[in-house]
Image (tube, rainbow, N blue to C red; front, side, top):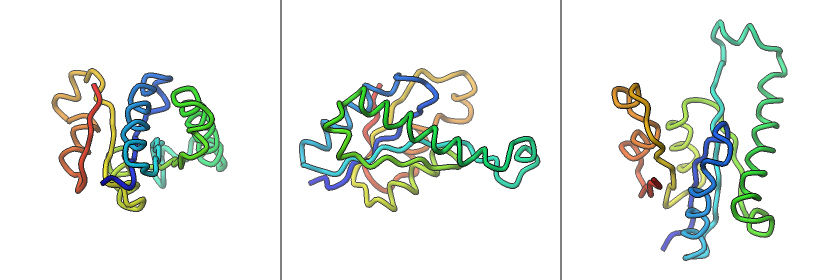
Length: 143
């Protein structure tokens, strides 16, 4: 029995992950499980790149990402279902943050979309493939 489902979405792709979110909601509803939705922002951290951004850039980016995440959830599953979703905005490497979020939330299942990969992804591996390889829980990949 699934108690917690984590759905990973990329808000930078507009509504392309709406079908992924709909499937995650259906899977969570099957067992009355908690649905968490995560999106990951890149981390500029202490690198030289961070010097090009205003000090409050990350906070504003997180707030904007949260708003877009909520908007995506409302569009995909409706405002009533969205009210029961935990929205998570993480910062770092996408697949690592998805796995960390799943662990900290106690997720039994991760739902992630597998979009048509670029040539470079065949060499490096897309985030979905990395999540599948490194996850300690089941991963449902939506194509």
